[in-house]
Image (cartoon, rainbow, N blue to C red):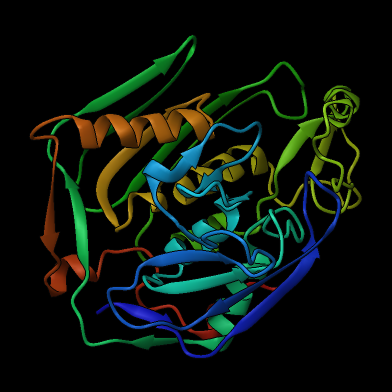
Length: 306
């Protein structure tokens, strides 16, 4: 069944790139509503922005959505991953500025808030996007691919010169709460040598050692070190789930990413929907629904916040 959150929940923090205070409120809505953002600070333009692949606008280091009137919201990927990973299908996110708060750099605070409020079943069956044939996109050494599968699987590989990251690979079936148990607390990461460059370009102004894993060669500069030895690849999988959630429905597919980022995953969705015969929408029966991300989760599964 489709779900929405039982009651509103607010998330307060700062924008990763602006460094300014940011607040997002997740509100329950009717079945078939989908996921939309509303810029509460805008009164002179259309403030509703659909969380959809064809509204993704060009941006650096994050996923930014923009509607036809030019209203935008950025850094949506962690919240979108939390919605998808918790099996939440319909929601309105009210936001008081151009960025979703970064919180601790992971999706865990969003997951904790969602599961803490609980989900309400809405009496409508879930429709999913079933990938029927392989689709691939590539940019230099980076590539991403969707293959047919009976549930959502994510397979990701990264390769960095920094010894604290190096080469990492992980593959997960996203059923049975895998996102919440395995991925949601993994934080965004960057190299220390890139921080000054990003800030000189007006990016990561709100980034700190508390909301990102900062790497300097073999050293992890963030207090407490890594939450997982392979936290970097887990976070890339988290990002991929959030970007795939912009398809507008759960996906039945295997996603493989090799050095892929936000832009390439969005290109992959665009290629999928532009390829005749590459997918179909289907109403999920009980067996398929049981394999969707988030099914079976409750308050007891909420992550412990660090």
